[in-house]
Image (cartoon, rainbow, N blue to C red; front, side, top):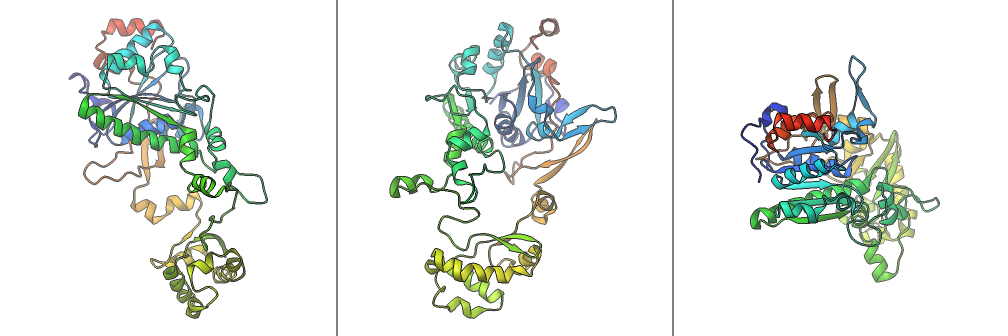
Length: 420
C-alpha cells in the first residue's frame, strides 16, 4: 500500500479526517466518468481507499450536469447524481492528450496501488497510457478496466451503454410481459453489475499484488456482467434447448412467487414451499386448504393449470380487501410477503433507516443532500459513505505537490499550459 508524502494532510481535504476503513493506505487513480467506473471507485473510497478522481480540464465528467441539481443561494448548481457516485474522492485535472499529462499520469501510477478506467477497449492504449505501458513503471499496479465488451474479442472497440449490455447480454429479451415487446430492466443494471464485479476483481487482484508484488489487468465487460445475471437461462438453453422469453411478474417455474394486487397497491408473495403454504392458509383462516389433495404439495402448486385455477384465485381473494402494509404486518416473520414500495416509501422504511442506507450529507454551499448509503456493513472497519464529491480539479495543486513532488513553479507552468 502507498504511503503519502508526509507533507500531505489528507485530513485537510477529506471532511472528517483521514479514512479509517479496511482499505486505508490504498491509493486509487480514478479515470472514469458517469456511473460504472465512478461507482466502483466510490465503493473503494467508502471502504477507506484514497481515491483521486482525474478529469480532463477541458472535458470533465459530464455526469456533473445530470439532474437532480442542488442549487446554492447564488444560483450555482451541483449535480446530486454526480455527488452520489463521487463522494469521498479527491479531485484533480489532467489532460492525457498532452505529453506532459501522460508523463504525470505515469508518475502518479508509479506511486498508486490501483487505477480504474471505463473507456472503450483500447482507448487508453491509443493514448499511450494503457496497462502494458503503466505496468512498466509500477509492476504491482492493479489496472481495472470496465467497458461495454471488454478488452478482447471482436466487439472490444464498439461503443456501448447500459442498454447495449442489456440487449447483448440476454436480459432485455427475457424481461417484460408475454404479449408485449421486451422491456429493459428499470435501472442501469449493466453499469451497476459491472461495477460490482469490478470491485470484486480489484480486491482479489489487490490481495495478490500485496502478497506477491505482481499487479494485473482486471478486465470487466458490461455484456459479461449482464449475462451472468440471467439465472438459469444459459443452462436451460444448453440442456433443454429453451429460449427464455418474458414472463411478466412470474417466475419460470416457482409458484406462487410474483406480484399480487391488494387494496392500495401490490405485494410480492413467495410462500411456495409446503411449510410457507401451510402457514399462509392458517394465517388467512382456512387451514384446511393446506390438506386439499389438489394443492397440498409444492409440486402440484407448481403445475401451471392448477396454479391458475386454484392457487392464484385464493391469493387474489385473500389480498383484495387488505392494504399492503396491513398484509406485511399480518405476515410478520412467518411468510415471505413484502409490500411493493415506491422510493419515497423505501426511504421512510424503518429497516432502511435502521441499516443507515439513506445518509445525510451537508454540502457547505448547497445545503443538505440525502443519498444512498453503503450496503457493505463491516463491524470493525465500517464504510464511510458521508464524504463529499469534489469540484473539478479541487485538489490538483495539493496532489501534485504531495503525490507527484512537483514544485510551485512547475505546477504554475502546467496550469498556464492547460495540462492541468
